[in-house]
Image (cartoon, rainbow, N blue to C red; front, side, top):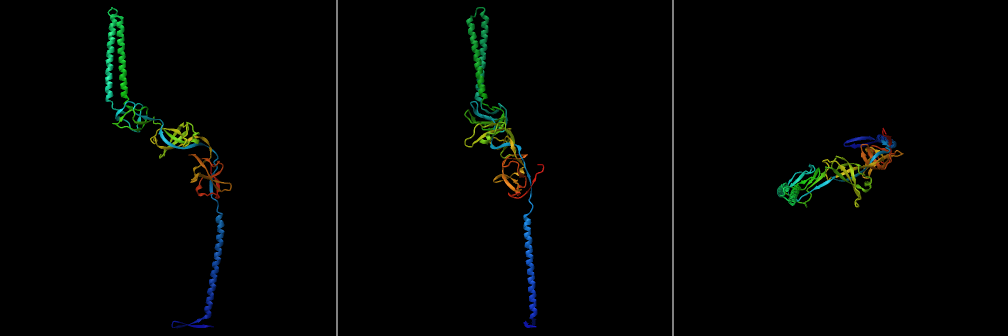
Length: 389
């Protein structure tokens, strides 16, 4: 046996070298066993991970609801924009000689009847002229009355020989001239009265006052600008700008829906006139759509319109089936391999019944009705036909 003596401080320690070598050997063996266990564990983990990858790849395909809409009868529509205006715009100006405006009796937005006075013009001179002519009428009537009396007395004396037939003829002519002067005086008086009446600015027909361009104290005459604008009967219209190709499909009587810009309210109307000409620069024509009066319809404003130009057959889809992005509208269809495909479409009229698709599909495809935002082209899916279809 080998022993070694070492000093630890002031103390002498005897160490058995054989025992120390045995301990080091046991430690090395223990470390090797631990390393072997770690290798085995790593191999087991890698084996399990390799088995889970195929499992993840073989996850079941998602179930999607599809529909084959076929063909349905839907209305053909044309979308257009344009301005609102009075259907019959009546400018009102000075009819007579004019003068200083004394009163303005209406405001924009007022309803007026035919012949109602809108404004009055100062008429003191015309009034005095009318009184003068009225007096002349009375003078002429008095002369005619005197001439008639003289003729009657002459006729009573003609039988006694005091008055000749020639005198009777002369007195008859005098009477007739006096009566003619009465007619002239009455006509002059009526003319002056009519002129005075024309100083009143009146509504040519019943309607709605749109604008007012005159104030009391203003001097107006025959050359003055328009003083008032009226919408006859309050009837309004939209002058829709329609493309040349669409204009050919429109007819008077086609129904339309008009929505003023900035308003959520829509108004039903009908096309009453289709422009016979096309603007050579814009290649557009005007379809005039008559709409009833409403305070939300303001002439001069802008509006959009959907005009129904007929009907035809097209696939009809629920709104959830149609997606859109920067490239336009599209739907997802499921092909024969149960893979998702994108199909670009053209959307027609949107109604409570659904969205009419005018181009891109025939209606026989399997079209995904919902969850399209969570699908990608080429993805495997399990199609399930929508219930009730």
